[in-house]
Length: 580
Image (cartoon, rainbow, N blue to C red; front, side, top):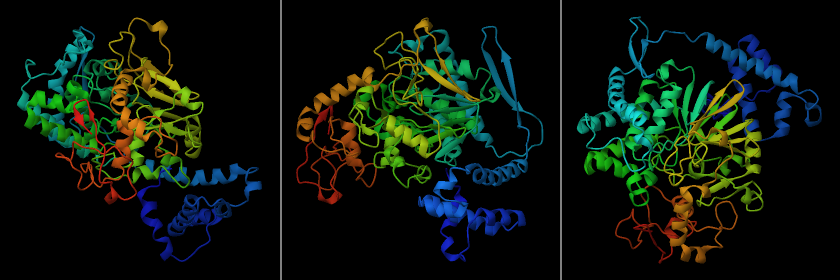
């Protein structure tokens, strides 16, 4: 599914090697005789034929033809599986099992809470952890812990209007907090940038969706899933992105997530969401007090706030883009991109995305992974192209039953986990139980509806187990999905669509990237069309565009084939105080 670097670097050497016959018999003989160069050549030749989607050539290597292969598939598969499994077993047997250099000390309190601490085990064991990084992370968590306790005991986190971390917060030294957040951001960046762009995660695994600056719900999950600390929990933890914006405690949430990454780099895993981009979490005009940038500025002052905001975004730049759990579940923030369903595509394309990636707007593969939504039942009945893709009410791509079926079959997967879309019940299951949307914040998306809750999922063995925060109405809970038009996002969309009614009239027949006629004139869609032509994340207008601030103006016209050939006059509009 995802060839290691060895295959990519060695494939180019095939032309310089002596041609050899590639067959399972040669591969079997080469492995038995210890002729690893010959075995390597056989595997590379087979891989090249598979990537070329040459059915006859592949069958010529493994033996048989299309008619006879169906009657005897097990012999071919079992031989190849035996070779791979034997190599994996040898590698695992040669990997030393060592003690952790720490003892996790758990002290139960009368309140039912736990206080955990890690102390040296006193054993002489090899480890490469940065002790300064660990100390910074522990000190940052020590600052955040009282805030999380307040969120639990006082229920202040349920009040949409109040932030737990403010310049007036008692016992918090703001300059020291600033230095700690910046330092931990850099430590977390170093710990994350060596990870693959698509994570491979073993079971058991807890999967959490969007947090969106909600410290109260994050504290609930901490108290429920890792009450004695992440080291004392048996499973891994995967977050599907969108840590910041909307909620009032984005700084505290981001700080907690990064500190835990530093302390538990192998267990604490995260992928990137659309709010882990400067284009979104720096949009003060749209998110106003919920904007991550504005919260940084209010807490630390404008200059220091910008420094903290940029340091955290540098961590976001290196976040992986997807994950696969137990070789069966594909995890992404938004959805599956049409690019990966095209002939000749492979999941290795995700690995090829640059790291760090400062802007996702001009990379179609990444943009669709971060922004896509599942098609609504109404869209499924006729608003999709032949591949099962269409246009979401947000203006980005949407994917339907046909595209999901093709994606899972192509990559031999069984299920898709995603976040991105507010779920009133925390977890929503759709598309024939093959798509699960996970939302881990109960605030800021359903206009103060007290029945809205949050959830996560535990994958264990062969089971997917939803876990939902109960708010005294458990009898009414279900896994019915909520679509984008049913949450506060619908209100935001109506504002954008009203402001663009002229544009909609002018461009209603413009075709989107997937070949279907555009039914919406939304900012996100045209921003995507434009940024696909940009050379840098801050090239917001073509050369010579009559605008004072190059970041302030974005042309709302379909991008031409050549960026230099922009029309002399472009339309721009004012949306919520910002001119486009």
